[in-house]
Image (cartoon, rainbow, N blue to C red):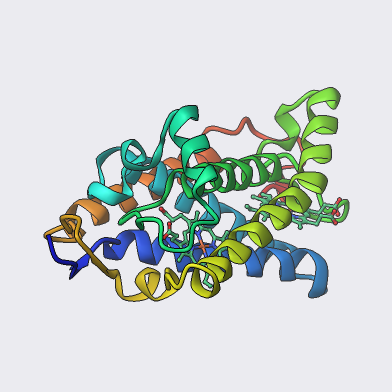
Length: 229
Ligand code: HEM
Ligand code: HEM
């Protein structure tokens, strides 16, 4: 079968990807660079949490190549793929390749951990994360440790992710990044017929609802009600 240009990454997956990149940069800037930006750090944190929840649903009911079942492979396939990594003209995968799939899951898990641990943080001035007052001291210690350290691991995995994109472009002559922008790839595989935008909108509303519940409704009342966000 001849290669043809076809849609692989739906609009929701592409939007998710670039909003996640923007949101993580904003999270870094509001925590480490800008003064007095902690309230924005919280808001972007809730938004990031919503993005991850959206992606989990989309990985279950989204379009073909966005589904976890499309890019979660067993150890054998992952090792086989790793062995062929340095063969420049090894066949390309239309969706995430077996190794890329592992890195994607790792990034999603680390970002989820970072966002959830954030819910227990305090800026030691005015702002407490919504679950802070509900947690025991030992839970707060663990969450504090995670929030201060997971981000560094995440940075290393993101560096690996971007290096892999460069490696594929330079060594394997496969340009993956443009497909994350316009969605299309030249491949012999069957593309998707639509981005299923109505379904994505519905999933986005549900995800926003879950974040609202976790941040606003579920947390127990704080004793310092005035400084409770
Ligand atoms: C904060 C930085 C970044 C994070 C956290 C991140 C995260 C992710 C995630 C989670 C996916 C999986 C997408 C999905 O299936 O939903 C992905 C895929 C991808 N990302 Fe990134 N990304 C980052 C930066 C970048 C940059 C700067 C580029 C472009 C140079 C890029 C290019 C891609 C491409 C091309 C894919 C698809 C890979 C494939 O074909 O298998 N990413 N990224
Ligand atoms: C994925 C989302 C998030 C990312 C990437 C992120 C990232 C970061 C980073 C890099 C720091 C600086 C850590 C350090 O100095 O060692 C930080 C601090 C902080 N974050 Fe987040 N965060 C996220 C979500 C949240 C959320 C949802 C909240 C609260 C609702 C939150 C509350 C805080 C607070 C209060 C601090 C200051 C802690 C301190 O100075 O000890 N974060 N965050």
